[in-house]
Image (cartoon, rainbow, N blue to C red; front, side, top):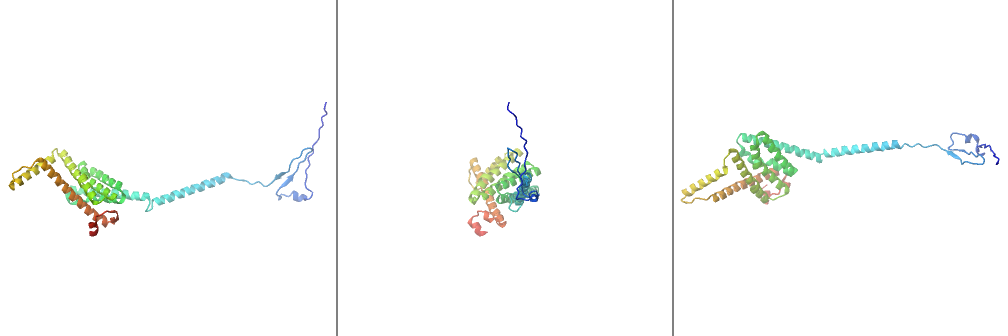
Length: 293
């Protein structure tokens, strides 16, 4: 059998002889060296130093609070910029307010003029608010003004007056404002407003009136024109009867002349108004009118 030898290990604490005992055991020392050297094993010295504590959570909360404050300040600054005189929100609000005010004013004036039978005296001013809003805020705002005025008249006066305004004044003002906003010249604007809008609007108004009273107004107009021409020719010693085709051509020519003269007067009147309002730079006027103004 192999004899078993038991060795008693006695740990030794080694303290340097050159260092005094009181300085080695003083609490102010930065590190205390302990050396445990049991035989036959030895351990390296353990350094005990002052620990440094770190709080990553507190730092993270500080950074998150700073980021929140920055986001809040950025949101407040953007809100103030939007509410400024050059902000997007301010401009949209101002355009909406002007659109509603012009629609209410036009609807009220049109309703009172119809009630007092003085529509022919104020007919040239019913398209002006749509042109002003189109020139100031864009084509979409002019369309909103036209639709708002039509809906207001639909509530106040019924569908007949609303359609009458839309066909005779609303579409003319919207077309004129859109063309002027796009920079079209007067010849194109007068041509489109006369041929496409005003004349078709008058024909549509006559057709709607014919449907409502159950009478063909166009036939009555052409018959009266035929009778008047026949009487004039007979009185002049010309014994000819005009055909109905000639009557229709004459009727269409008179309608175009009437619409063209009305649209031309509207161009002159609205140019003067917009020039007085300080919007001359956005208008494309003829040279003779610029010299006159």
